[in-house]
Image (cartoon, rainbow, N blue to C red):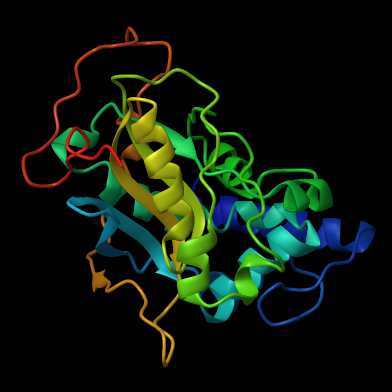
Length: 270
């Protein structure tokens, strides 16, 4: 089926669905579409890269597919807070853009893609894990290796300062044996990097080699707080699905080769 014909057919199906269960555009509120064409265009990948300092002497490459602002922020919030899981599909492009960059280094080829779980309160409220859902809708194989992250302190994570998030975020529990395996962590939104740091430390304690971290969206710098210093990267055709490893395809304990100067796990024991 040609692309224009497929687009027309999809539009007709969405129009028919709107008659049965009316929806508004998650980006602008326009009626009868989950996401109008103009807002869908606002989800075009704008990938960026950074180095995430996990611990003294240990940094890992970090990538994100789009800034967490405007339409991207509205769509992600609608999916997570309003349960609008149909919005996972339009987020596929920025997700794949972030992962394409994350799996480009030789050290990441064949790495397992491990989603970062949400909080118990979030899981109970939504009934699903957003990161796992987004990866699944994008056709990506993931390895569930971390237990649901406990809530740290009081109040929602998003209402704390960056310093408080970094200080209070508890490590998740590793629930799958990954000793000797290389891992790329995946989150939905990265702000301070505290969630990814905690997950990386937990996996390192379990003997895994965290060779990269990725998020669909990155929160821009806010006045008065130190955010992650991002560098805008060029978007490229997503080929990540051919690079993700299979948790059952390699024997536990198989050697992992890390690219020199990028990641060092063996020296971090704290």
